[in-house]
Image (tube, rainbow, N blue to C red; front, side):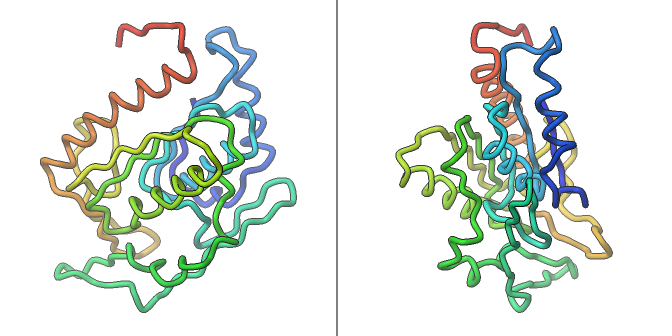
Length: 224
């Protein structure tokens, strides 16, 4: 399994990631011939690209991300996906002085199909996990748009888990809620309410494990 989070290198899905994914297959401790990817936030862009372009990726978890590049282009073997423009005027500030970015693609995303990842080309399975209280990305809308693409192409290789009250940073269970932090000198509001967010993390973790076992090692029953 490969885990991807938001990092500066997420602009590239090229040889290093390709080698890492394909290089896992020969190891004896790796079951089956598939690779699983767990991606969060901007890492979802990488997760989607890997699922689309690397046949070894057969199960992809997408947690609170977009179905298009934003901020910087994505490049794979000369193919360039340009970032979707955003509307800076839709950035808001809450009472605590924290930035909320979840509305910044409301206007530019309409009719912008040329920016969307061709998710319908992926052969593997997808698990979309979204927090409905996410104040950074309108992740539920983006997940539903990606699912719409799959449906229009006759695909049913997806599952959506949507959690009311959960914020952006859905992490392993019992991790404390991080509802705000400073990133690149920006004070961002990640969102989330303590109790529903904690419940979402506990439930999502079990579902992630179930999803990966089903699609990566379907004949092996874990004792976890």
